[in-house]
Length: 344
Image (cartoon, rainbow, N blue to C red; front, side):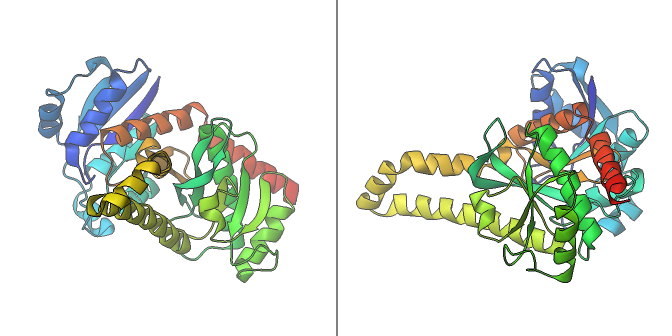
């Protein structure tokens, strides 16, 4: 049985969406115990309106939560027993195996840093994200690839980028079932001497290692193409790229919707392209993936999108469950030790 501590608060759609997602998981016949953490009265008020299996749902009380507009450090100091900290403590104390939250990203990172330990060989945790791609990945043909870091770091060293590559590769192997995911550094050119001094040094280290299936450098145009399974970069750049990808997919949908409403010929053309548009919507639908990992800690942490609906919450819990069953932390630990031995 896998036990998941699920932060009931903080997401844009509120407690209702999180509880609904948990209820769906409880009815799937999987041995997944959900610990809904937050305001007990509010959670129970939502649960009574849902069809769920009470054998797989537990409610744990917490004192407040971190809202999206708040400074995460100040909010956690003011509310040391808020939902995200309480959920993280459950995992740290062994009462749960994984943490899932659709709440404040900064608060999730800080709470995890307070409650968990970094793995040996990891200097910085990395927040990963999935992004839609043209090419399919892994034996299941996933329309997503992984990028990290997308917000947990700013200034990184070459060794940090190497550890990001190892962590992203391990995660892709477990979640996508891809035994040898291709890994690349995001740079301004494919040549090994392109990029900052940090990228050039990381390239040399990864090229000399057999721990990951290193592809080399990729450029921005390779991201939507899905040239590789895992793209590695520092957090500031990764966050900018991620927001751009989200914005482009939303703009395309808005343009198509506006065109359909305007003229008959446009509607006719869009109808002829309907299969392609449906494929585009499916490819850019992050809800089907649910969440992405915060990697580098000795516990599983999955950050769901702030706008997660019940389907996305349910899928985030499933991703967390898969990461626990695949022994993600120990997989990363083993790969880091192999790298260290190979370098000595």
